[in-house]
Length: 260
Image 1 (tube, helix red, strand yellow):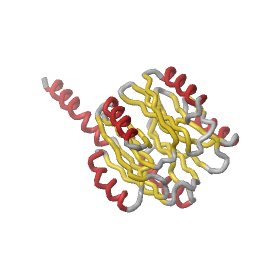
Image 2 (cartoon, helix red, strand yellow):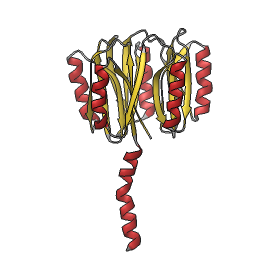
Image 3 (cartoon, rainbow, N blue to C red):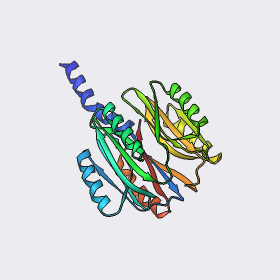
């Protein structure tokens, strides 16, 4: 009986330990074209989908989506520079890839991809000078890095990187003018040092992802931003007053990331 009670205690404690280790990271930037920024938090994708349609009717654009620790978050803004938007959902990667390639042929670019509740959700846009979208994949991060370097040599730049279902994915667009670097660390503490160093070198954090036990960040010498900052917390509700403060300071949220 003693062993059973111990097992039950650990079973009940595990979700709390997982939540304590989980992190939401918000990246803020100044210099963006965004105005009237806002976000929606929901437990299920269906609720987010309804909110997207509602916000589109009000003239907002969908900037970013994130899913982590039972929550979906959608980020909206006006004056994004996008001419048109749509999103695609599929339960199987092969089906999503097929729909994505079709979108690419129609002139759309993929600016964000999230996976939660067994669903792939991709945001597609036209406009904002994103051209010739494509993607590369690899089973291992080191192999993805090699492919990224080859893509850089051909004039492509990283839009964002993801790790889902055992594969690394890098989504790219043609851009000969923006220098980039790609960095990864095993802990967030170490990655903070990377951020500080890259900022000193004139780079901005343009993508952040946690996958396969490591933080992976893309840094770009973009003219879209003039300064950056970030906040993190294991609970979203603790970030809400920080977001309001950042907005008052003139920052806009440019990336929502979760990790461990």
